Length: 165
Length: 130
Image 1 (cartoon, one colour):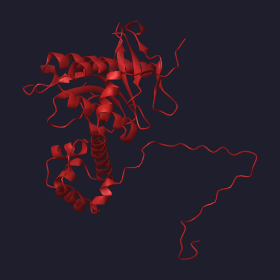
Image 2 (cartoon, chains in turn brown, orange; image 1 turned 120 degrees about the vertical axis):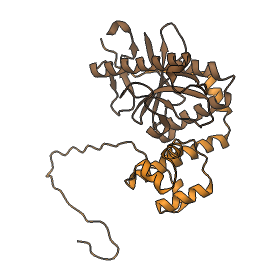
Image 3 (cartoon, rainbow over the protein chains, first blue to last red; image 1 turned 45 degrees about the vertical axis):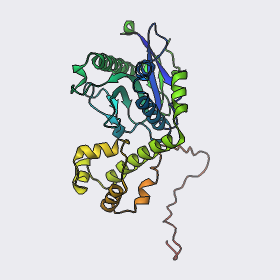
Image 4 (tube, rainbow over the protein chains, first blue to last red; image 1 turned 180 degrees about the horizontal axis):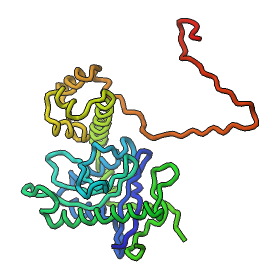
């Protein structure tokens, strides 16, 4: 999987930097797709999610308490944004402390399923963000990607390619 | 050669429009819920309590406390009063925003002057504190 990590300027602020990724051959981010796919049916929820992301970036930071954890592999930071109990949408992301979040995709979670593995769409989105987390972790370890001096921004080679491995 | 640049900035007019549609009241509601949750988490942590311990003190399930701390909870006055009693503080103080968690590093380089360290006790109006 080849992709570029981009910063979502509208959400990023003094408390956290919010990123998403654009897959090769695409022009919009995984989060943009999530919005496009759900805005017609779940407009109120999408607005609520965007409002919360804006608060995270500008006011509260990406505090652990605002996310549902253990959506991915142990220690990979993959989680889902916490939303009100009557909300249907799951948005998957990777959280790096309280200072940065990479938004992936997601979708509505049907009432009858317990985990993302039980739904094809959620499985695809969760597995995509799990792979992205793995790629980024490898590149942070190798030094290809670093945290910028004030520790709030990713820098380095933010174009991820399978050929890099 | 390694690219040292930070991420390219990306905007989406649809998302900008959605944010524009959020009313000032809705913005404030979300802001209050999230900052209150952050404040509550910090107060519980400062007491040295786990979520489960706090849950016991307010007679709730730990899952209910997770919801309280998620920043999505619409607290009633009654619940805020219960929290205030358990935390032993006025309810109004629950709304004081939590201080910025960002770490600030101050580096002072001293050169070409004689170095000394002076200890000063806290200021007191009642008299000489030395």
